[in-house]
Length: 101
Image (cartoon, rainbow, N blue to C red):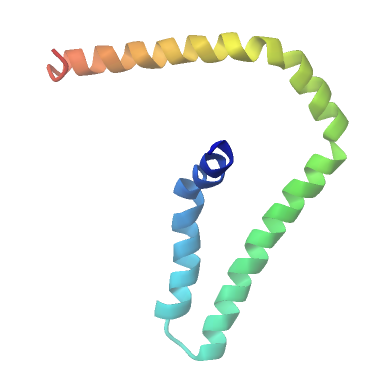
């Protein structure tokens, strides 16, 4: 289930962009070849971004591992503090709006 949730979670960000790219193929007008060209441009753009990210991670892998191993002990504490702050803000916001109590 974790893997499925991890795969589905980013769809909120990527699915709209994908739908715009694919939708322009069908609604953009023009000839069939122009539509295929738009789709190939979208695919090349996404492929270029993913390639740059993958190569970048491969190049700086050791530095990233060192940084993460040093930061890891502090991540849990920071996450807990941010969670308390976010919860406090939500309680304050809904109480001030008169919607919570």
